[in-house]
Image (cartoon, rainbow, N blue to C red; front, side, top):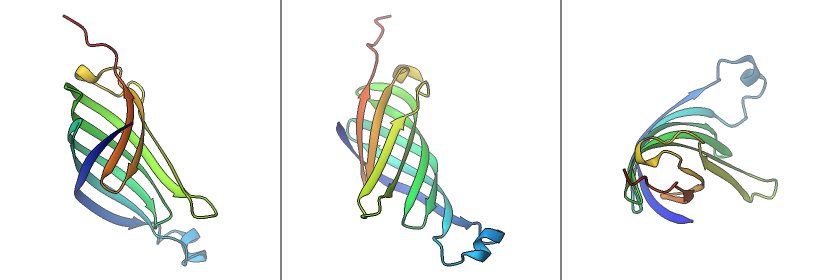
Length: 133
């Protein structure tokens, strides 16, 4: 896996669901929120992303982001989906992947898996050989 640093450059959060009848029956539950976010990546991946995150308080999140940049010297875009929660013992459960067939430009055919932590993307990826044309 390759470790790639990032910084969050935008985080605009808004809660939802408080008006829902289910919330009225369980107002002590975690707050649900949507976040419009942007990141800047540096290292083996140099680029920017925009995306949306759905959060469930501090208990879990799901995110989709489109990244535009250069990976291993090849330029293009791809979509990354990732999320996390925890098990009953509080141990983290993470997942992430490059969405199949989402890559464009010189990154077409990019595949891989990802883990996200604060300020770091751990990416295991494969790219088809560059065409010589």
